[in-house]
Each structure stands twice: as C-alpha cells, then as structure tokens.
Length: 393
Ligand SMILES: *Cc1c(COP(=O)(O)O)cnc(C)c1O
View 1 (cartoon, protein in one colour):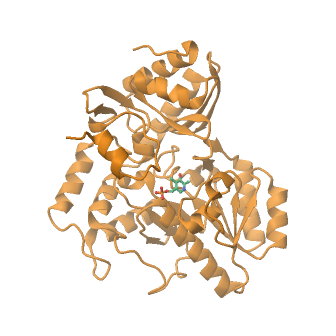
View 2: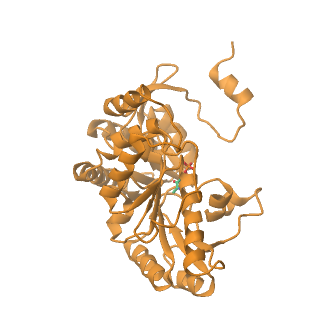
View 3: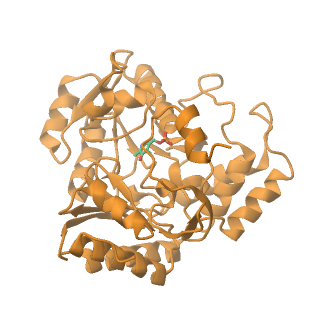
C-alpha cells in the first residue's frame, strides 16, 4: 500500500511545498508525527489553533454541538452563530456580523460592502479600494487584486479592477490617491503578516484613519491573522486607538475550524441587506461552537500573558548571533536570520521545533497559551540554530 506522502504526491495538485512531516496528533503546544517524533508547535497551524492542539474545553464545545446538529443552513436560526455574533459585538463595540468560512471570503465580503456603501452614499464610480504594497488579503480573484504583491498576481491576469496600492508609512502618498481616485475604502493589515511580519506604526495607522474621515471612505482592517488575541489585544487595531468601519478576521477565530467573521460598525451595519451576500456553510454551528469556546476565553489576563511572552521572545532573541532582527506584535513574530530563512526553518524542524516562514523571514505564531517552559525550549533551539547554523538534536 502507498503511504500518505506517495498518495499526496500522486493525487493532490502540488500547490503546497510541504515539509517532510506527517502530523498525526497533538496536545496543547506539542505535536507528533507518524514516526512518533515530537515537535514544539511554534506555528499553531498558521495562527489557527489558538489554544493549541485538541484543547479539552474546545473539543468539548465542538463535540457537544456535533452531537446535536452539524449544519442547518442559513434558512433557519441556530444558537451558536447568534451567540458568537453577540459575543464578538460585545467585545469590540461593533454592531453586526457576517460569517464567512475563511479569510479571503471575509475580505471579499468587506470589498463588496465597500462598493455597495460607496455606490449608495457617494456614487457608483466610487469603487476603488486602496490597499498597501506588500499586503496579503487572500487568493480569490478579488482578494488577489487587493493583495499588493506582484508575485501573487503573476499568471492570473487580468486582475479584478478597482484597487490602488499605497506605500505603507507614507501618509502623503495615500492622501494623493484618495484625492485623485474615486475611492470607497482603505483596507489594511496592522502587521503585514504574510508580507514578512512587518508592523505598521501607530502614527501611520492613525494617519490612515484620519484620511479615511477626511475623504469619507471606509476604514477596513484585515485582522485575519492579527486578530483574536494574536497580537496581545482582542483585535490589533485596538492597540492603536482607531475605530474601523469594517473588520475582517478568520485564522485563529475558530481555534482550528474554518470560520471567519466580518464585523460592521454603526456606519456599515445596514449596508448588506437580504439577498446581497451569503454562504452555504457560513455560520456553521460546529465551527461557531468552537469559536465561542475561543472568543469567550479572550480576556485581559490572556492578552497580558501574550504581551509578556512577546516581550520575552524579543528579549531572548534580539541581538543574538545569527539573528539580524526581531519584528512583530504579541505572538506574531518575524525573525530576520543571517542564514537563508528556508534552510533555517528546515533545521528548526529537524530539531523538533515547527516554525513558519513569511517572505524571507522566520515566523513564530505559537498557541496563545503555550507554556513558558516549552516556549523557552523552542527559543533555545532557534538560538542554537542561529548561532551554529546547525541543530542541537
Ligand atoms: C491568511 C490571510 C488571509 C487569507 O485567509 P484564508 O483563510 O487563507 O483565505 C487574508 N488576510 C490575511 C491578513 C491573512 O493573513
């Protein structure tokens, strides 16, 4: 019989360059592969498994819902999505929620909202959504166009029209675009995650918010990766004291199940009306039950521990041999290594630490509740790889 790797290679289109690791189980921040090898999880399924692998409280919430009803469709009311929406609004002050299944779909919904809002309030020619160079917003055709990195556009032209790109940290350039183009919204990440974990400054984020006011366009924040406690706040925009009109999220929301959310402020809560948007699986009760288990535990105490762990990572790694820079917010960290990031990541994995990459940097996004001892063990491996360019196994 063919093994998993052979079957995958034969039958799955090769869009992913996989590492030679077959994950078969896990508990908390430890994962195991098919050969029984154990790894410290510094990636959390790309910032999705917010409380680690098979967190007991999350498993109980999901299985309890699973044994009631797995799906009902949006033709009917179900408890979990209504309760999750209320919880999200309570924790953000936003007014209404739409549930998509992924980050890209969340951003699609935001872009549709911006177009409809602008058509109704400014005129149908005001459809341009300004995004940032080096951003990442997803892989569907509209979110690909929103993504400000040519490498993702290649082979898929023509792009969906209606996007303009601004250089991050250059408020004057953004103002020129808002002045000269007929704009509906600005969509941005507070930390460019896939773009190499590059945080934007509070000064710039505040300036963007001010320009959105001045030119009457929506401020839309993509919290797909940065949200749900990842950056040490419920949503990362909260650190910067701005008030977005639309917030999109996904990744960590469901604790490892596919669910996203689009949050609407007072100003945008009435834009999407019956029949204007939808999703068959949107608000799926099992996914929403998992998300309730996650979101109900996102509190000040957890955020403080995320920020404390973050400071510890910065302190432990900054300025050490082989490490050129440490960037990020909360438990979304990018490390610039002297060694090529891809080979650095391979060495960490061989040494039993699963780290991620992001545009030439090593990215860390461990479970939010990773124990201090495991975090230190993982950081020691990273330091050893950085110093010697070899593993400590
Ligand atoms: C991952 C990501 C997306 C896309 O999310 P998917 O669930 O893969 O569609 C969009 N925006 C940001 C900022 C992301 O990090």
